[in-house]
Every structure is written in structure tokens, then in C-alpha cells.
Length: 272
Image 1: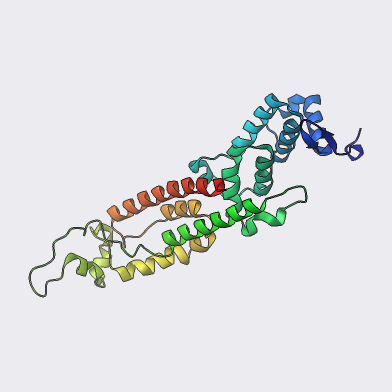
Image 2: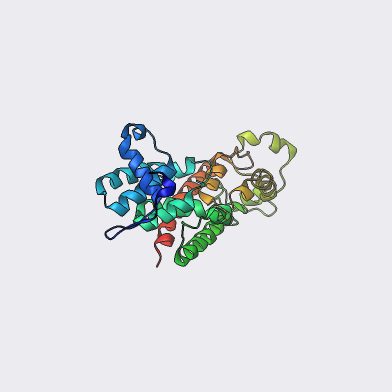
């Protein structure tokens, strides 16, 4: 029987089963060897819907595990993924329909970092609830706020690691180390910046920040994706406007911020 001859089949114990999903499941059972090594994501989702509807629990568990491997929820694997999954909306709808909580967090984050949440790809058969839409909006607002906080400018409270706790000068007319750091550096000092033990002036750092973060396109590119944006900031070849100790501390702070953001996303998508 061909797929166009199928009608939607209703099972009292499993709800509605679509013809295309049923046919996909039949193809799996007819030739399981063809699915031994890799299954296309859309085929996996179709099989999961069918197995869930029919109550084939052991097959469902295996298929869900295969799909979760394509949608890792670990921070490291998410950052390594260069672009959002284009099928995030379909995965989110599947996760809600089939109660697969492990897929919700990566799917929601991927939707939140996509233009228009990826809703332009929405098909009639895929649904996203009003509650989930509100969750997505709140997640995106939070992600944008975190990115602005991290990348819009250097922290105004920044103090060079090698100037913290330095004593002030007692003699009138003798600049303190902090005053020296905020003065425009002489040409000779710029030339020896590679061996500088303290950061250069705030003015010099602002100009360099604008060039490395804004002019490079990083600020705009990651406006909805602070996790990968922070990774991009970490990988910048920061100049010697900052001393080595400050560059290392800032990278460590960005790694901490990544973990904090990823943990916070948990709270947003679980909200009632």
C-alpha cells in the first residue's frame, strides 16, 4: 500500500498516528540493516512519533537515545556546534509531544539564538504552545542582556590585576600607578608593550576593544548567542593593551559566565 493511500490511523492507546510515520516505521522493520549505522534526523523523529504512539517502548528508547546524541545538552558540545540546528522547532515540538525532556534545553537554546526563533520554518503539523513562546521570549531577553553585559564594553569596574592594592604616592606631583596607567602612554612605552607588566590606558583599551569586538563583527554576530559569543571573545588575539594576568583572568571569568548562563537556561524553559 502506498503512502498516499494511508489515512490518519487512530489507536485508542496511543493517540493519532500519521501515515508517513507509520510507513517509516514499517520500512525500518522491513530492512533494519539499512538503519544500523546512521539515521537521518527527520527519519529519527518520524520513527519516535510512531514508536511512541504504538507503545513500542524498547524501540522508542533506542531511537530517542540516537536523537539525543545529535542534540547534546553539554555546554562544551553546544559551543563546538558552529551554527544553530535548523530543525530546532521540530525537535522542540517532538520533545513536548513525546515527553522527551532531554531534548528541550538544547532545542530551546537553538530556537532562541535563531532569527525569528526559526518560526518561519513552522509547519502546520508542528505546534508550539503560547507558554513555550513566552519562555522563548524570556530566554532571548536574558541571552541578549548577558551578551551586552559581557561584550558591549570592558567592565567599568576593571582594575589591572597588577595595580590592585598598589600604594598611592606620598610625594606631591608623583603619580600613582593607577594614574600612570590612565595617562596616554609614551611612544617608547608602546614599543615595549609586549613586556609591559600592567595594562595600558583606559583610552587605549577602549579603542582596541571597539576594533576587536565591534569592527570584527563579533558583537553583532552573537547578539542572541552569548555562549558561542563568549567563546569567540576568549579566542580573540587580545593585544598588549592588557597585561598577561588580566587577559588570563578575563578568559577565566568568561568561562564561568558561560556555565552560569547555561545553568540559567534550565530555569527559564522549566518555568510554569
